[in-house]
Length: 398
Image (cartoon, rainbow, N blue to C red; front, side):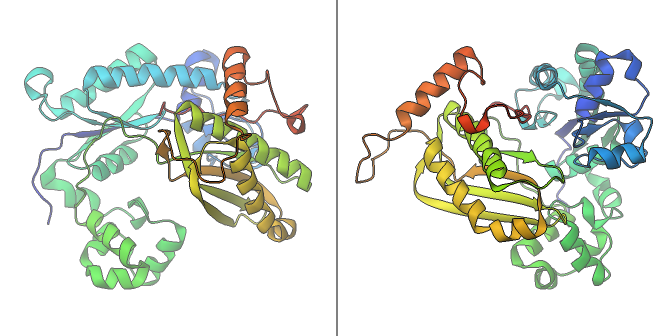
């Protein structure tokens, strides 16, 4: 049963963020299909999406679908600045802001009725302020739970506002397709649809035990809870990242082992620098791959002791790549990513024996300092010389 509680949670999500910034800054692009990214689509305006263009699609395919699209190079500094300005509006609305990414956040506006009005009033004013101060359209969903608020914003896009009151949650949620539930990907959807489970309402009618038999115990509990309105999570301020990662799209051109290694080196350089900047250490290295046939694979290795040393984490990443080398040679590779997880704060640690007095900590710190003062290209590895620097996606501060 759905529990009666006020609809006080907002999910605010900027519309086609990168593309909207480009249209904001260049009036000639307004109302036209815009694609951000040359080789791979990083973002598409709604005019381009209407032709079937989607994020992560290859550039050639996107241009075939939408020949009239204007293709622009990404401007990460502009997107970071826009994100900072939008989050300032969020913080002026309520102190309870939980950033999800640079273009979306949850806001808890409970308790603000006497000074700011109803949640619907606050959401409408938030949209006006983001447009007035930052010049960008934003969609807001308002509901009793995080999950429902996020679904509401997705349904309301683009440039909309949707309030789901507690007494009409079932009316809103149950007719939606099962893919609207967090955790229902392509494979899970196939399993459910084979059994005639097509909508969220269908899931709500299936006993939890029967659902667990189809998708597994954990997924069964999770999906049944969401479908029946149970999502106890609150908006939490100041949550630190669970992982720090980066990825590099390779396109469909085959890469030599040396070229692939250079890509991995560049990724590890970036993520370990961010790790140390956040004063954190990692215990697990996760390798994510997308092959030429669009299948994906994930490999991971957990260290005995957490570390932020570039050399040590690079050794682990290289070993993971080597282990999957035959598959890469057979299928090709279009994307490689590395994530560092099992993060801990970089507090003083008991050094494991034997102590390496010539470890990489001092070298890492020195290189970080030089790059902070003179730019990321001031010091680089020889293997990365004369290679195109990968795009570094803007992220929320940790």
